[in-house]
Length: 322
Image (tube, rainbow, N blue to C red; front, top):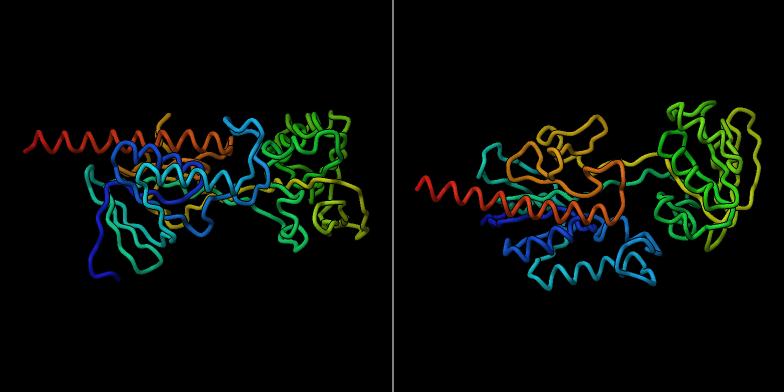
């Protein structure tokens, strides 16, 4: 462990749209934020080739460029961005208490406020061809990327409510949507199942899994396998959407921060406040409904404002007691 322990006003964990927006607002409020980027600097957008739905970019922008610009903006106001992974935390239960974190298993930091923006990681099938073509036609977000496949044939994998919702969304803009459900029934609610089966251009395939994503540089087709008969079939598609869920990156906070049964951080009302005073959560780590860059950025702003107001309240209380 480090011999001297650094104490800061505001620690931001995670470097996606939520983290960088929190950093911009916190820096402008003179909280002198320090950000640790985590294992994937820039978050999920660094794997997205085109971002067409973030306000302010009339011609669109590629994800990595957007994240570089967000970092530059945060740094312009005084945010210190550090490459590193927060590996453990000891969060105080007291108002005005000091939160202790360890970075990369060795560096200790004490923070008056902590903003958790660690995001959520999309679950993938684990196929080599799928991973190779991420950003080349394989996506985990139909709402984000579906527009680029307007009028084309695509496929979606999953049988839950999210998959059903994204399949019907794609059906409105794509020529044909092949939906692969690995079991003999969907897990989605009856209402969502009815919506899928009532949509004429959704080809619903039960007991079907992805055997191989076809294509060298971009998705050109899909080889499907019936897991009952063992038969395979190839279809031509230009886009493959994986909708089998997300895993919030909250493992290091378990046992200290209140979460739902799937690991998403629970925040108080319309705020970003967690059950720990001075600890706030923003972005996909606490949002399993929308999961968009713009909504993540919005909650990043909220978290910084909540942190600023919290510190002002602590200072006011301290002054009164003195």
